[in-house]
Image (cartoon, rainbow, N blue to C red; front, side, top):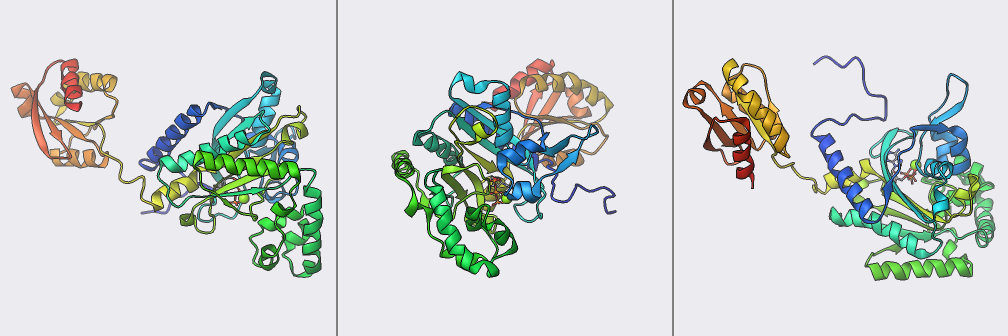
Length: 425
Ligand code: ATP
Ligand code: MG
């Protein structure tokens, strides 16, 4: 085959059948689940003003420092493709005065764009499902967010999922922790990675997130924040742990979870799976009580998460959970022009009443070639009309799974459809 002249941009993917059906099925389950928890969908533009992300995500984050798809539009506005959803969600909620109505629960599904080095589980366009729960300062909302993400791993039976939990403290205890980290890292400044040296004074907590081997020995010996939490943060953290026990959700406290975004405080969590390899996190989230205010809004406590759909589907594939898609639908097979015309009212009716696909093919082919196409479509049934059947006023209905035939009278479209729907149940 000739190599394609045009290819998808590096780090992006096309999704074609049957892969796209797996995406649709996952998204449908997600929507059902989010709605069960009382969340409504929000959709925001694919691009926003760059300033929103610089303010919202924080200018010492990977996202803002090096990952944004940033461009000037024709009126010289500084814009960026959405690299994450939380800042746009808060922007939209403020713009439409949604916080005035009290607690607010929103979910989203859609693409994000980050200029990253493409590798397994890491793309330049990827897709996230996430939720944001606004208006509750207590640990009940943290539990709700975690429970929703965890439920998704449970309904799919992902046995190796691990919930990693940590607390980042707040404005009271974090400055003390910052000092402790500075003291810990400063003596080793010369041996740290370049990124870490640059970040140390501005945001020492980010060093704990470093994946650079040069930093590993110092990250390992860094003091854990949990030991320095103030009374209120400790209480919040302990209450959340007790709630997780009540909900039957297992977790491990992992002091290395600091998250790459600046807006988090108190609770942070990640769900990891061993099958993902180096990019082990499928879901990350936490509490961000200061973000709404920092984007010009009122004091609104908030908690949320984002889950990577590519990585989630990779887990399902690795664990062979999705499996082979079952056969669905009917392949309408006409042999010859006259039969093709006779099938038109029947196909029309089937597409009105059947909740499964009705496939049709309009070429003159041998029956065997038609059946091959039916297999490729993974049809469950074939409705066959050749000249013999036409003469006898009959149709052959073949079950493609069991290879058994049944004859139906070639009547009006709705009679055939009724016979088919009946045979279905
Ligand atoms: P990572 O540690 O993998 O860089 P992150 O901390 O940047 O993740 P978040 O911004 O919290 O991730 O996004 C939440 C989830 O979105 C991640 O756990 C992951 O599943 C997914 N995700 C983030 N960036 C990408 C990407 N470039 N390609 C695919 N999935 C991604
Ligand atoms: Mg990242």
